[in-house]
Length: 509
Ligand code: NAD
Image (tube, rainbow, N blue to C red):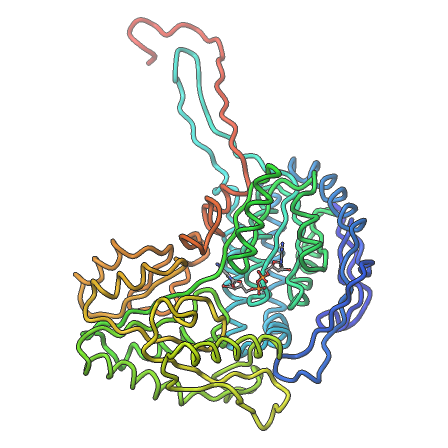
């Protein structure tokens, strides 16, 4: 195996011009679009200008990946796993740099960024166990002298298209398992935050992959679309907004590709009157305002259950705790609320808040116009809370993807479940209660793929699979865990006969 060349620049996390990995070489993009990336905490600080890959470069990367796959698929699974172990070592050695890179291009608090890189490493560790994961099923003697067994084989070239909000973690949901299963992998990083993901591929290549087996193609919609329909590409792992997820799912399926497309969310946090409010508040605030609300498991609707007084206790406690958040640069250890991705995202979120006001929801806490004196050019939005929203209002219905929360009020659990299930999304939902009976009912009736009980961010660990229901997911097999192994492989059932000696009348000794 030949390791691929590394990019020839010093500061690859921020300013490297050669950000496309094609056929084992780091090259400049040759497309027509150039994107300027700035620090979310300080929009005057340019991180990089990234030129996207051209159509010819996409084709070249696909051909190289296909060629590399033909040899990689024959590498024994334990040897493939050894490369994953090496990759894990490199990730650990670069852990802090990667987390800082996430802060710089995405804005997260350093603790949040570290957590996200750790979650990604967890998936690499899962992929290190690929020999066990790939073990098939066998039934000897399905008939006389006949045995049957199932083999799992790789697909070929697979493509990963992640969103901007987890620049390390989501590429790591995809790439390690795809490659461990014997596939080639092409990453099209999110054009709004592509630098950390590119660095991950660089480290993976350094771990000892054959040249061309992994690649990076910078770009947005056009590059994605060319990859999705490319004849060498067998499968697409997509994570992003629901509208795009659905369109990627349809296009990919029409072209006969395997596809998993994870979409957006509107997650409900239901707080029962018997909840331990004091201890639950941290989970509620963390869920709604952690990562500035820019995550698919972020709480976005708080459902306060009970009589008027009980509902008010939840609402007042929540608003008071939200007021305590300290916005700041993700590298500033005293900050507890990070900026959103960009000034464009800030404007989009402001527009959503304006819309909530126009719809008649009661704005209890307004995050518009927030300026952080030490970071006057940062894309900050303060915690925002609307009371008396309804599931029909835009603000109560649609994903805002920012630190904006709508309160719904319900008289009992039955009404709270009905309100939650009206959402067209079904990524996650959480219940806060001391009642086992309420928890069981919630678990049975709620229409969402990931549930939390007294937990605000019910993210499944790497050895479980991750995915929502309804408008939050398009496909059959979820991300990471056992579903990912199934997604990145196809089954072959072998039925074989070896003519043997006849068994003695009394059976073998
Ligand atoms: P997005 O949909 O704008 O972009 C996601 C990716 O798709 C990017 O790489 C982008 O370049 C590409 N893309 C854009 N338009 C495309 C098109 N027409 N065809 C093919 N590819 C296209 O999402 P975003 O703004 O980067 O990320 C935020 C969204 O991601 C939110 O909706 C959030 O809920 C969702 N998200 C979901 C999960 C999950 O697990 N369900 C996880 C993280 C984020």
